[in-house]
Length: 200
Ligand code: SF4
Ligand code: SF4
Ligand code: SF4
Image (cartoon, rainbow, N blue to C red; front, side, top):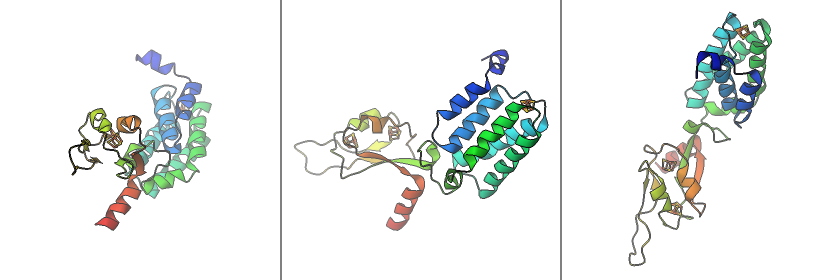
């Protein structure tokens, strides 16, 4: 995209793109990234510096590395942007973030939960052994070799159960789409860590 084309992105387009997301943290990140890529002209500091700093903090929430201080800072930046930005574009960006930040979702992300399952650092794919028929369809669908298991054969009595090797999983979601038995599920990273801690 050329610089000229980039600058033609309108605020309505920015909002439409952000509204495609369900997670309030993702909405805020998409809004601010689209704003920075297009309408933000850089003529006043509250908006230009504020937007860059807010993006850094919101990204931490998406990546699972944020603290309460990041949320407070994004709030402070947004209040300041809303009051001191020179034009409506900066004020509208701040307003959008402030509307989303009031949900509990922001603080949930600090504890590793994205209830919309859109922040991939906060989710894991797992296979439920009780639903798995060992058909092996997911094994063929996973191009990252993250699934291990042995397809069921009539002449075998012992099987290697199907399992997802978390460190290899890129969270592409292909396996969940092909499993016809509802045996692959998304769980929050926090939920999984708690289960693992109990089992340890
Ligand atoms: S508030 Fe308006 S004038 Fe100021 S940097 Fe943002 S877009 Fe430019
Ligand atoms: S596709 Fe589903 S049922 Fe088949 S092996 Fe994979 S998890 Fe099990
Ligand atoms: S989400 Fe993608 S990488 Fe992970 S196990 Fe499923 S198909 Fe493989």
